[in-house]
Amino acid sequence: MENIVSHTAAGHNRPEIYRKRRDRIRETIGDGVILWLGNSLQPRNYEGNTYPFRQNSHFLYYTGLSEPDLAMLSFPDSGKDILFAASPDMDTVIWNGPGRSIADLAWDAGIDAVEELKQLGNHIEPAGKQGRMIHYLPPYSASSMYRIAGLLKASPDEIKAGVSQILMEEVSKQRSVKSEAEIEQIEEALSVTDRMHRACMAAARPGMRESELSGLIQAIALSKDRQQSYNPIVTVRGEVLHNNSYEGMLQGGQLLLNDSGAESPMGYASDITRTFPVSGRFTDIQKEIYRIVLRVQLDAVDLAKPGITYRDVHTAACRIMVEELRTLGLMKGDPSEAVEAGAHALFFPHGIGHMMGLDVHDMEDLGDIVGYGKKEPRSGQFGLKYLRLSRPLEPGFVLTVEPGIYFIPALIERWRSEKQHEVFINYSRVEEFVSFGGIRIEDNILITSSGSRLLGPKIPKTIPEVEEACSRELRGEWPPM
Ligand SMILES: [Mn+2]
Image (cartoon, rainbow, N blue to C red; front, side):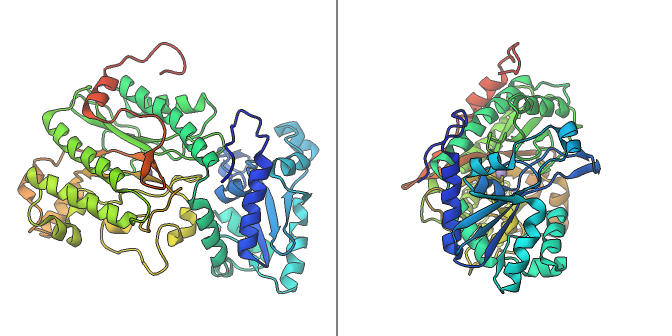
């Protein structure tokens, strides 16, 4: 178990944490050389005008270093690591400042040996000639692909084919179980996210634009020098699952869906969704649908514990949803059969949740190794194919629990015309809801030895809590709330 690290305590025991993480991965890999590439700045519209920098999460996990253009080699046989960084030239110092020295970076990461970045190839070449395996993870950006291809003198196709399966598996195993230090980071991120969501509920009113609320919640994070874990979804069109436009105008009677979360100082994600009435009061029919989503969410949280598969939690959640939708007359027939057939996916076309850590969809760059067992391929069924986590839960996993009910006009129209699942769906009743929008409720939980624990502060979630939070006034100080 790692010690709890406080980001305010000048990171005095950080080097030890990263050294231990690398010791473990070196021991499990056993031989060869592990190549870790940090990220580079990415151009926005020309090379000198870049997106805000975000470090590669694996590099962050094993070094804690968040500067661009770093690399590391780990040698399992000797138990050593070498950090590679470029010494700044005078132009860089003038335009970007001197930055931290390579020696300081290495010290913070607990690495004993440093080299100039341009020497990296000179260390890889002899290893390759000696026939030693070069382990690397799949590059997800074109620039990393280009760098690895150059270093290993191979084509992008060869690089894709040559990724280290064992490294992917061991990294996934190690990063899936969160330490206390990591949980502390996630809860720290959630404390900012709590304020983002409360401020959004308090500020929203008819006549506003979605962009004003999106700007407000991002300002709260930015004023604490935090990025968002992902592009926030702030929309009155909640049925568009990843709606990334903010041009909609808020109208009385509509619901606003806010799916957003700040990053922690060390880059950990948070991922929270709340849906609330623009006018501050739910209508009766909104209450009905909201109550169902909330019940499904609470029941799924209750079910999550070590040993149960997340696929079973997902299936149970879908069944409860169908039972409830039956009482509203939207569905009919046997709930288990309806879920088996995938009929519920008309209303709930995604999975119940995913792993979360340094990435909001933790380690999605490693593919289904993270969320699925070796003998369990992902389903191709509509809806179920978006279940990102299926495997048995273990203590230390951090997950999102995020059911939703959506009325997607194009999908309803398509299914109705194709007479899909007519035994389970009452289309004439569904038509009455076609302009309803969508509701999602999402929290982040930690799997404990006996069950689960909700992470972070309690963010308004029940109908009375949400209506109370909507009735508040934003306070005058900056940042609000
Ligand atoms: Mn999520």
